[in-house]
Image 1 (tube, one colour):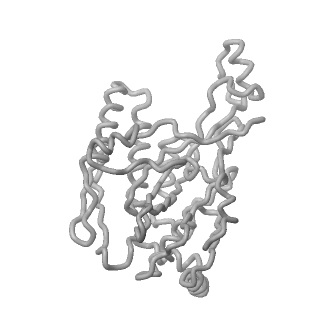
Image 2 (cartoon, helix red, strand yellow; image 1 turned 90 degrees about the vertical axis):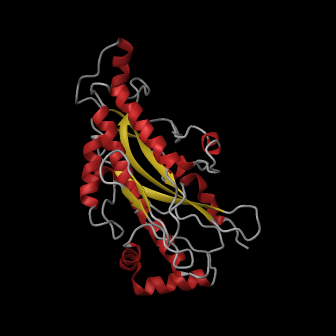
Image 3 (tube, helix red, strand yellow; image 1 turned 60 degrees about the horizontal axis):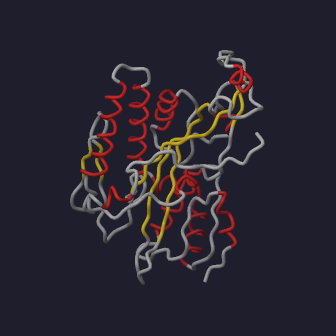
Length: 311
């Protein structure tokens, strides 16, 4: 394909920050969140079917994978009708106020491929058929597939919970396709999402948990540890997973580099491992805090940041 495709946000909810402001919340969707959903860039695929895990060179199981990851991946693939991949990222920022703590936004997304609109690319088999007005019925014909993602963000580290929410979202949306009363079911779906965003408060650290019903199934429980202890981690097996990834020597080396404020670059073929290692190691610094720039996942358009000087 002779083009330079770029990622963009097709639709978001709430549609603008004004929605939150009107309900007493000062939050907004981070800028360029689409870059972090596809940090490797927008990669197209041409074929008779969407790409599989081997063709995408996906690492679907890793040291950071929870015990039920095989079932979760199979469920996502079944709902979406193609090979999918789950990833998560962290965006950190500081306010202009001196001594302010870093504010983190956690994002979780499920990525998959969908057919490109018919006739969008002159080199694909369906282009001529679209000009002639013929239908594309030949299963042997190649066509263009484009990546798409459904993303959820939160200011508390509930990556595992957001993964469950994404799975329920995919199940709900796939069940609507071709069903009777599709518009009514879609309306109820948006009502559930709006209720999740507006009606439920974040838990009080170390005091009160939050129970959230979402699209059927068991309610989801959100809990935060006391504010005077080890910072919250993405999931219960985080430290164990990082120990398996780095080993004792790797953890000691990385922790020493962080305590001496070295410039650190993490590299992995699994995006989830980057965030996992970064979150665990910054937590193990407690009671110290990492005060330098913190970008666990660096998208391709931001690669020049690696050469940025640090004072």
